[in-house]
Image (cartoon, rainbow, N blue to C red; front, side):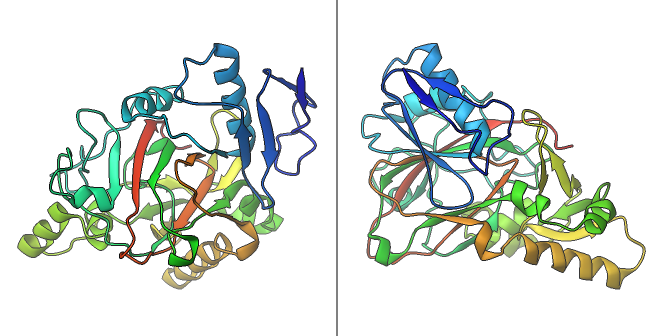
Amino acid sequence: MNVVNIASDRRSLDMIDRFVLPEGMTVTATDGPCGFEIGGVDLADDLPGEVIGALMWVFYKSGFVILRGQDRLTPERQAEVTEWFGRTFVRGTMGDGVDKMATVSSTPVQILGSAAEDPDANVAAADADRGGELEPHSDVQDYAIPPAVTVLHGVEVVPTEAGGNTYFANLYQAYDELDTETKRRIEHLKWRPTSTLATAYRVGMKAAKESVAKNGLIDNSDVRHPVVRTHPVTRRKALWLSTFTEEICGLDDPDETEALTRKLKDHVVQDHLWQKHIWAPHDVLIWDNRCMNHWREGWDTSYRRTMHRSQANGSRPF
């Protein structure tokens, strides 16, 4: 019997003191403000319900889990694993689909990075990642209902000195560290994200570049999200904004709007909130977009870097 005391960790929910893990499964906290590494679980196996349930329990405790050495994980199985967390999230359903992404064969698993431009790759498009930095964000925030969970499989990774490392920020902690007056002030405010078109254009997606060349860049999202987001499972509050945030809404004074927007965006990128992940081949990272931001370094594109990403749908933010 493997008993893990996660509730004693500073990142826990303080709801359950001790949790009995299935035989062979291990859980180790990272050395940063978020995340646990799970051992003894091969996602390619036909796992029993108690193992899946334990994995999900740890995930909701932490918002971010790492499973290493998943070299047997196929895109088809990755899609199944993702559906443990909810129905498949499909991109490219807004407007003219400027953010529709290449996928692996007939699966909903998106292909990011070098392999998307291989002439023999079995993908739906050639929106290759050019290796630039992706600033701190939560995925697809211009959708009224963004994805709740992201699963990312490092199929090909680059040496750490060449870049490409990924960082995760604990937005629960970001909210908890706000002073009482700021919490009161932002409790019912909303924010406007960067439009899907603008985001897709800035990361170099082909359809977006063609649209901007034809019609110009119009950054006019109609979506509004809560600044303070309550997680539907944990009931914890997160300061839910990022570099995708264009402005806080609901204030009469433009100067106050600008100052508050900058203050909160600066708050969520403080160094102590971030956990660095150095990729190894066939790492699988699963994170909760409702309480985590992530940021990817650019990388030296003389090295190949290929990721398989799948996402589970969520609920409307509240």
